[in-house]
Amino acid sequence: MGLMDFVKGGVRELAIARPDSAKGMLVYKHPDPTIPNKAQLTVGTDEVALFFKDGQFVGQIGPGRHTLESSNIMFLNQIVDKFTGGNVFKAEVWFITIREVAGFKFGGRIGDVEDPKSGLAIGVMVHGEYSLQATDPTQVISFFGQRSWANDEEFVGWFRQLLLKTIRDRIAKLLVTKQLPLLNITSGALTEEIEAEVIEGLKPHMQSYGMRVVRLGNFVVSIKEEDEQTLKTMYKDAAQIRMAGGLGGYQQFAAGKAMMGAGDGMSRGGGDGGGGGGLLAGAGLGVGMAMANMFAQSTRPAEAAPAQPAAPAQPAAPAQPSLQDRLKKLKMLKEEGLIDDQEYATKRAEILKDI
Image (cartoon, rainbow, N blue to C red):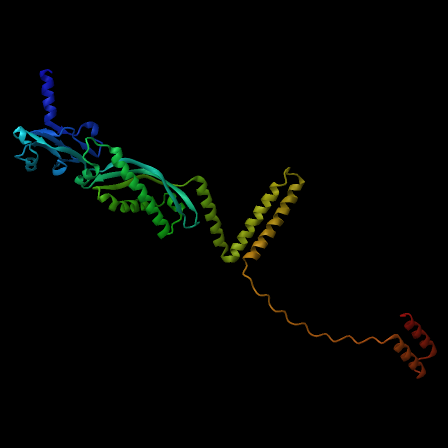
């Protein structure tokens, strides 16, 4: 090894800082636990450096360039390697980003939620981005674990799962406690309200890790297109029922739907679309009207039939005289001189016709 290589190696040992390749990481661990006395530690304006020995937190150093010697940084006395005569410190150095770091993606299915307006259980999906910020660097390390390198995917993946769980809980809360229709949630009109609910709901879960979710970005709650169409149709039907008003309005609405449905079905059955099409369409309307009437009858509350007034008693018809009585009466009228012979003969002939 030449002189320049030796000099460069000594400089690297004396300069401790986060490398450029790790600038975007939330947590970075310096790979060498052996730190020369008077080494130069550079801490960025958006980070802190934490020192651990044997798994125990020793101290932290804020932004700036610092010369590591026990005379000006008192906690370094706890990590002096006595076997080297005080020329080396033995410690693990962690760099923790304390600014808000954005661009973490999340997404997936958060499960079925019940739409309070229709009563249907609908599968809901969500995707977007979120930002993280360390609020207590020492707790961050306690969760992350003192490993030999930082695995950001494993680190932020856990928070991603917490985020999805909280989004599900908060959306369910909005649906249940505020009775918000699911289409209001997916429309984007309530994005800010949902974001505030989610961030507030995450606080107690994130505090124990020394982290917080600051904000959500490109936050979208969605459902399948066919589910959206189903809900829109049901909402429209419900609005028409309300406009029609009450039970009678519902019966009228149902009657109209039945007429249209039956008419369409019978029309489609006409096949060739010739002269029979109009007839089938008319028959379809008739079937639809019958279905609507049946529905209206089935939904109308049962009522007792009103009592009909009793019909007045009709006088009994007088009994008709027998043929013999009529002939006797006619003969008596002739004998008493009330009718002549010709009248008697005529009336007698009329009576005898009834025989």
